Length: 600
Image (cartoon, rainbow, N blue to C red; front, side, top):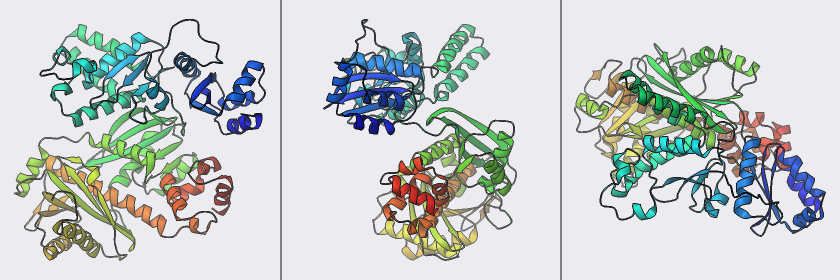
């Protein structure tokens, strides 16, 4: 690389701590650490020694990894030098490297502490612990092996992830001692199925990525239970372990990230049951989840309608929570919401405080909102609600429920949603959505949506199994329209509706007014609310796509517009984006970003 190439590469780097590698044809020539990556790498345009000048001349590329702290940069540099033995580095004289936590790439991954993860995993690992080409997932490095051992043992006791060698795992006929000690759920003998085991592994990954509460919460509950039963020795041990776990994601404790993100982002999710609402808050800093909590609100009338006839449940809960929660707390830089809160005064206050409010429709932010919604819904009981619902409706089963809702803006950008719940939980892989003919008629829109679903089922063009129950978001009119569609296509599936105003369950024969704390009513509410959210989200995307000022921007075609709206959620958010944010979208260079900024 010549001096100009080094300066050009340095100009694209962040001013953050991290580690850089000069590489030649895949071989690492030199590893260094920096408090400011951009400034440090730029200094190699004018090397201070002949040795370093020769190294720069040989290098063909520069790779970086951003870290949160200088300590992390120091530890990662040490491990990379130990691993790659770069020719131009001053080698460390001791034989020490720092511990990492590795999850192997097996069907039933093994968790282990290692100072020497395989080179494929090392090179593929990024800040979120994601890997490429089937490599192991590696987190770290960390400063204290004792601390890492405590945390890994706590993870294994809580989530049962195996720690045995491949030799011990293969060909077993019965579980080993780790299973008896509660350290492993024994996927080797299928005491746990691989799908459930994978969910436990995902929970472990979330903790190692920075979501501390996923381990501290169960430890705290176990400690409190031990104290209540006067098992004070056990409680004290758990207290000490809890302190170690809580401190684990401190200096040098988090996984290294390759990209930064906005500081101080709060993500909110809402679940409503009767006159009670749960708001789950996720806290993300520098692009990583660091905290989460849940808050219960009394929400009388939250399932009612506003003066314009629209649903006020989730928006009114969001507006109330934002004001009450943040009135005495520091506001985040951004709020990610599942829906618009709809309160002009709250919007004005947040704008005056410089808080960016976004309702993401796709991408990483949308996944964070989905995670918040999942956390909010975890307060919902599972007291065999499917069986109770089937008994109440006098149907054979209610294990598989499909929910339907329509959304439009005075007849424009009309869409329909079709969500699926199995055993009381959302089955997102079976979600479907459909553009409808623009018309300002909820009954005809619902009729068209159900006719589409029923026709696909009867003609065997839908790869999903038939549901046990169809739930319509609405009242008698919407249910009658849905039943007309079912009869026209001759699809024999029970259908009921859930009216928002009074939370009445409408069936073809009668109307039920179940107690507000009835588990089977809560199940229908979750399906209804998810169908509503999914419809509103799709409508907002279609509404922005119908015609936007982006269509008139030179250099922005349909694909680029789609990427912009997918990345930022709306034209308004595109308008508020910085030049740097715009350039981060694939296909948008300096000139196009400046054109978009000036036109919007």
